[in-house]
Image (tube, rainbow, N blue to C red; front, side, top):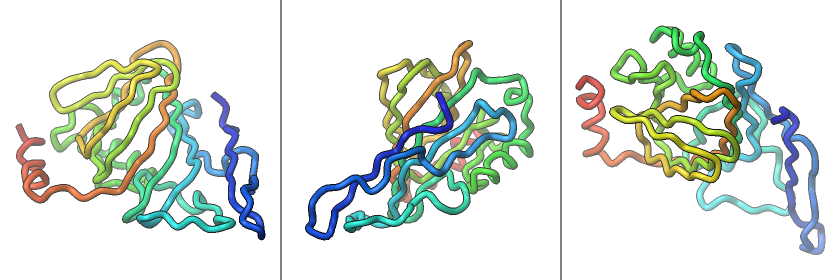
Length: 195
């Protein structure tokens, strides 16, 4: 998968007719410092619900890398996961925290606080994950789930990590939707991570 992924954005002309506003590589690519083959491309973001539909939308992916959407927002992203390296497996909790700081979301990191994989994290989002190519392991608190091309996951704010244990890259499309934890569920998280 190339870093230059095509993004076509439509809108409306002065008469209200459908037109293409832009057609070219998505402008926001985040390359992981641990491995240049581990990258993500943000295609679009919204910041309110319902999302405002204007004749010509401003660029929504500008600014610093943010793992999660803004309040009441969404993110459309495609991630390219290379086979997991020894560098990832050898990460310490401090390394994990730095990795999530680089994603703009250090509070999501759970490794060292009960998470069993260096990239374990929890976000207050509903995530739709569609495996486009390859295979990947979804690591949960007590189980691993093998996912292959064509599989879809609905991630409901769960503690998880993505681990590519194959010998080929995996490509996953994500739609992240801002959410709110039910207070009764959220109260259980601290206890669950200690068990």
